[in-house]
Image (cartoon, rainbow, N blue to C red; front, side, top):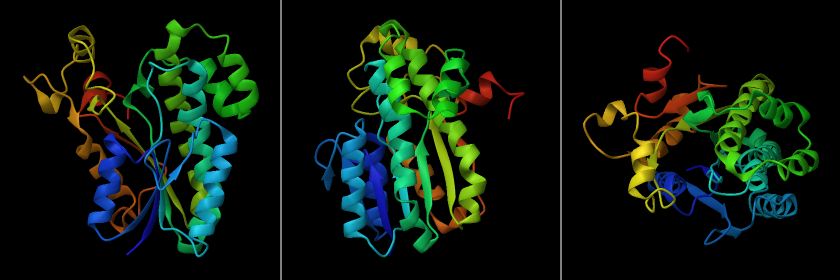
Length: 257
């Protein structure tokens, strides 16, 4: 039996990962903005610190893993997208690193298969992942037009994937693994309310594993990849961005890997 922390584990992919860990007999501590074991708005650093304090108080002897899944899509403000999709993941992962070291644990973060899209702004990715100054980045984010939220989303997830790759060697020195899952279009509470026009746009390129079908991936398919990466069976995997998108990225970028 292991001890795992998950952020954003109340609905969608996070809930499937939470339930999958519990079915395997693990203890799971869910940090989410509602209905969590600890409720916090992780877009705010002060509330991240409160959550980290609660985790340390509850599990002083260490944890086996953390799944940083909390995030928002391109319907939210640019400021919220940068704060929650990147800075919250980094602060939560680094904030429990001492607990992971005690059990030689691992971390999985939720990225997106949009990280290879043309919507990614390299200058924003550099600003987020190189400067690493949340206050300054969010000040800049307030000036970004809201019609550029799709670029903000893909850029925030690209920056997160870059961070995972960059830190993976230093994590490995401490006996830790860190990887990312990059989901494609997935059925979640956020996507279930999409209009026909939005669905048509999302399925403009059909998901290869859903060929001939008008449907997204199931949240459990993404969660299964997370469960594998946090398990001992993935002991040799570190610094990987695992695309769980039914083959979309391979279809569009077969020569890049």
